[in-house]
Length: 348
Image (cartoon, rainbow, N blue to C red):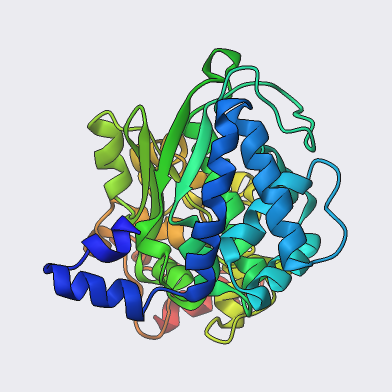
């Protein structure tokens, strides 16, 4: 409520925005949640929140309550979606995403950030923390759903996955929580999010401090600056994948690069040294560029284009040394005929 009304420069405009633009269903949800807070006097934070998720599911009438380790994630996603059309789309999309993405969302969204507190509907594989709050996750999901609900969940899982690299799971951090901000992507279309890779840029997730990380779009070489300055950062793999199919804006050539596997990249790393300095190659691998499609990685080369040997327009071989060009042609001493190689040299 404060964010809506207080985000305007004058009280009148703030009041108008709250009255005229605030969605009624969201306001009603706020009002209904007030009574839930009274339960904090006798119950834990996790118990109160889980009960609220269950009550919201029943109120929306989406069918039987989810069960298993996916339950908390699905119910939290439904609350974030707010409108029935997007809620149904996210439920269907959750069933379609890969098992790995489903596992990431299920277990990361079921971490409470409270010591010795657990959801009754989710069994943790490993106790620990910190728990992660993806700031603006609801706005991001609502922006892409319902048409791109599956992509929204895949990208959200990627944010959780890479954030866990920055904050490894530790039992001693079970009572801690951190914030991961995704301000820059919350209102972008899927096409706009993925188009940055074709422009020599990438999405990076880096730690500002021990309690906050941010996802931002930067040129590829900015990662080196972050690492040099002591910031931990990782690449967010938002580019299209083979299982996604070809988006309308993506050509087949681009898609073949986007679907390039990490194992294939490792196999061909030796071939890449022909156009990349060894120092740049080792820097890219140590900084995490090995997660990128080779078409993107090739733009990181530090070797100037002008310093590379160029072929002629006819794509002819590079000129031979003068000593080789002036060497005497070979002639068969028995019949006096010239060899094929010698005839070519004479024609030159």
